Length: 142
Image (cartoon, rainbow, N blue to C red; front, side, top):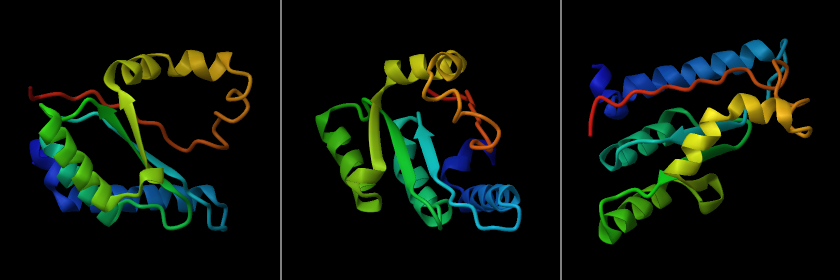
């Protein structure tokens, strides 16, 4: 079901298949080096199953994979440390990025402004270099 998608392995398998298909279609017959970034803005209870399923089904076979985690996460120091330990078992520190919730919100809201205003990003952020950007806002809980 949609509300249990975070712990539903077929959903992540389908996501991994879809991303691979997009990478294959962009290569013109050549294997594309697909770098993948997963931006997680989730309630603490779903971080462990989501991260485990990303690790299982959605890692890039040819490029790097990064996980961006909005923090703070957890309800106190102990729960935060438990979440960090669980995620650290799945990904190396170089694969993990932690970002403050409010900074993430501002970044998401200003993606278009940042794309056109930044002289470095403007020539890179185009249809030749980015196959897909999805921003989903869905909070049926908490």
